Image (cartoon, rainbow over all chains, first blue to last red; front, side, top):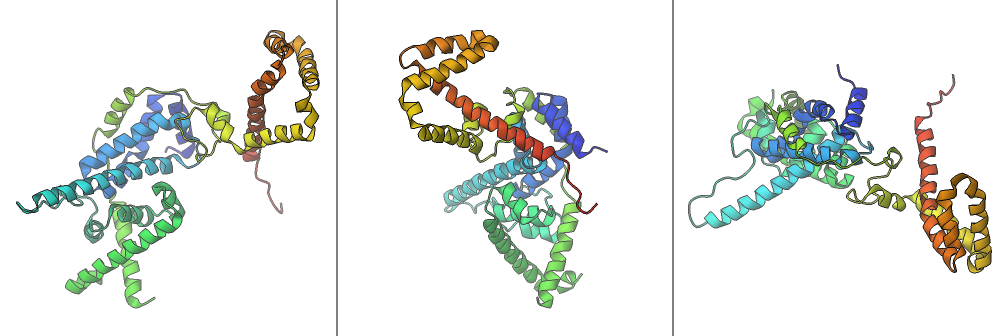
Length: 191
Length: 167
């Protein structure tokens, strides 16, 4: 079983240019990095690009990595920033396409998971699709990854109070969706 | 908290736990693709270990470490101490013969050890106005020295074993 001290060794060796050590770091962190990107962008293709880009940036910046935060938190900060940027670009693009197609064919729903990728299983996954990317990121980091608010704020490079506000809005939206579903299928909700 | 609130919280906890269990996995060949990109990336040399304690907030990463180090509080404190010393002994800064005397004496004391290194400085300090140039040239070292002391102390404090209380 690989320990945290192994990781420190890999980081140190990767800093010195060892790609073998960097491979170990990628192997250890790829699933969580990819998962976070997927849950924010909503597209498997974009998530892979984001996660790959994040690892390449990490490689580039490793000589300057000072170990103030853990490697995982640092990586997730980069992944979240890139994924949110991608989501914002996708949203702008979708809005522009919608405006262009307004007079013609009905616009394609260029929203979360428009490729039909299996993102989050179950009802929570469906409900997350209706949240904004930043709200999704906050919910994923806080509820799914079980990180404290302070760490979520660090990963998203936001003030703690802003994270609390996003979390509160996200929870209200989830609550509303949950109540809507409860009214339509009450027996499922009671499970 | 109402019963509805409790039910929602319970549902959210369970749903989040389930979702976390079924976390997505990176696609096949992901690591190889990352490493293929990494192979094309140029690498810059790592900064010396004692600069790694620089807070992220100080300076931006694209700047070289020896530029960022001067924004450190310890460096600023070093400059402040030097500044206060000159203000306190104002005549030092104002009377060239005192400064020249100090610099010359310092170089004379160092000459047996670092002769070839201090000789050009000694020659420069003997020129009119040269002592000010030498002092300006040496000033960054006051900052680096201050930061070096701070980094060494911080490293000692960080690595000191935790003391047990009551045993």
